[in-house]
Image 1 (cartoon, each protein chain N blue to C red):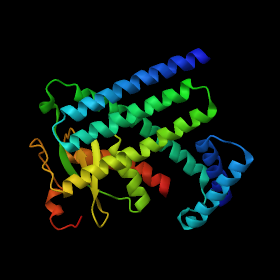
Image 2 (tube, helix red, strand yellow):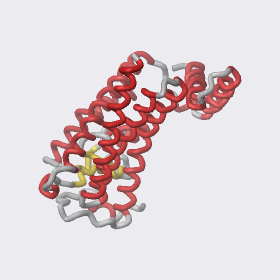
Image 3 (cartoon, rainbow over the protein chains, first blue to last red):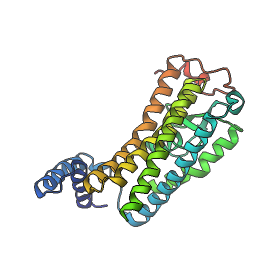
Image 4 (cartoon, chains in turn green, brown):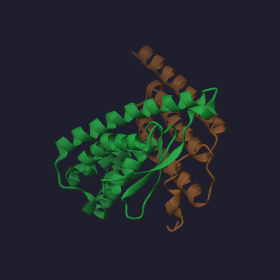
Length: 159
Length: 115
C-alpha cells in the first residue's frame, strides 16, 4: 500500500471509530494518520499488495475457524466431569523459524487463540517460543502442528 | 431482512453468553493458572466477540455496528497479549504449576535469564 492509501484508510478508520463521517472529522483523522505514517514510514514493506492481501485473508479465515474450534474444545473440557484425566498440561519449547518482531508477535497471538495452546515466553535470542499446552499428545506433534499451520502462513504474509 | 438480522443477533448473543459462562466455569474448575488462562483467553474472547457481533447485528445503525466490529478486532488483538503476560509473569515469579504438569521446558532456563 502506498502511504497515501494508508492515510485514507486510517482517516476512514478514525471516522468509523468516532462515529462521525463529517468532512472536518475525516480531515482530522487524515492529519493524525499522516503523522502516524510519517513516524512509522520505515516500517512499511515495499508494495506487493494484491498477493499479500490474498494471503492475509487466507490467514484470517484459518484463524477464525481455529478460534471457534478452540473455544468449543475448551468449553467441552471445562464441562467434563472427570477433569483431571482429561488434562495433560505441559510447557514445550517450540523452535521458531520466523525471525522479525512482528512475525513472532503475530504467531504468538495466533497460538494463544488456537486449540489447546498458550504462548508464555520467547527466548532472548528469539529462537524458541515457550508454549503451554492444555492437552498434550506428544511434543513432536505439537511442534509439527505449529510449524505446518500458522508459521507457514505468517511467513507467507510477511515475505 | 430485519427479522433475519434480529434472529441472527439473538443467536449470536445466546452463543456469546454460553461461551462466557463456560469461560467463567473454566476459570473456577481448572487446577492452575496456565490452564485457567486457556479458558479465559479462548472462550472469553469468543464469548465477548459474539456479544459485540450481536450488538452490531441488532442495532441497525451503521456507526454503532462499525464500532462494535472494530471492538471485536481489538478484543482479539488484546486478549492473547494479557493472557500471555499473566502466564509469563507468574512463571517468572516462581508460580508452582499443578502436579499434573509433566514437561516444563521453560523451567530449566529460567534460572539464568533475567525477567
